[in-house]
Image (cartoon, rainbow, N blue to C red):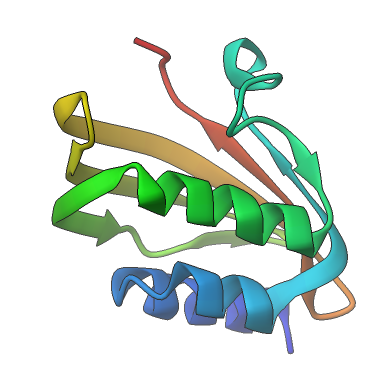
Length: 123
């Protein structure tokens, strides 16, 4: 599967809210997930391995009461890399409604995502 095919499949699944399915299907077992420096050591910070990435996703979803909007841009692909812009408008437990926007950059090797890195402003 080419980087472009991986990117399009990820976008399709994320637009449907199937984040865990995307990770199970497209990620390498030893993939890494990187957050902005200010968040790297937090409970949803940097992790290594698909199991840890899945757990990070579960923790995030447990903090969500309701998702009002989930938007994912078309991917921009260059060699083994691609990026998408994501926008989630959600009501978070104990925090109220939150508008989250980020740039997500992915690295693909051997038909699998080996790295994801998120760029967003920490408020």
